[in-house]
Amino acid sequence: MTERVTADMWFDPLCPWAWITSRWLLEVEQVRDVDIRFHVMSLAVLNEGRDLPEEYRDLMRKGWGPVRVCIAVEQAHGAETLAKLYTAMGTRIHLGKEELGRDMLVGALTDVGLDPALADAADSTQYDDALRASHEAGMRPVGTEVGTPVVHAPGPDGRQVAFFGPVITPAPKGEAAGRLWDGVLLVSATPGFYELKRTRTQGPIFD
Image (cartoon, rainbow, N blue to C red; front, side, top):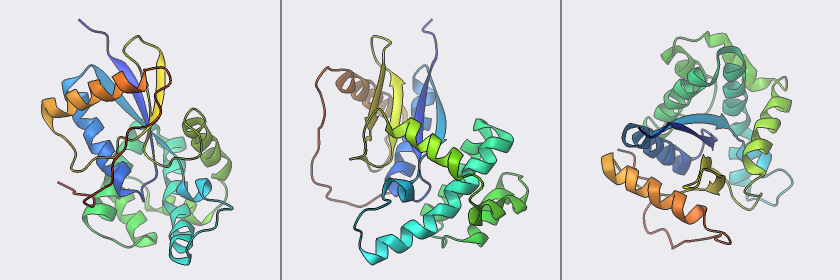
């Protein structure tokens, strides 16, 4: 039997493309010998100091709260609970179209049986050093010209590879998810391979 390996994905709860990729990875878990472990990155941290449109700057300001709460939960309850919270947040943000803010955070925490008071972390800088460290760990191998999702995984020869993406919609299911995983690992492990891209012709599809 093939030994199971662990792949790591860095997410910001705000990003709809990361949400779709995360749902794809959970499908991959079912059809390949891989366990997915989730970590926090921050689009707000990534975009610090950049010249952004006012609307996007406002989104980045609101984005501090969810990632701070994610780090607080990871520190208090571990990676498995973080994964559950990400699912709860993503379901509310991307499927439920809930506004970012305390009500969404309290609702997501309650969904996974956590103390709603953890939402207080949204307005605290207490977890910012840990947030930045998590962000840096995810982004260092891929650089700062990309956003989320970022994935680190053992390549076909066992050596670690890291990449941005894949950006997909909707998330493949079943064996289709597995075939995409095989292909992504193959190209990302090819020396000198950097980019494969085409214009997006549709927005995120959540199903």
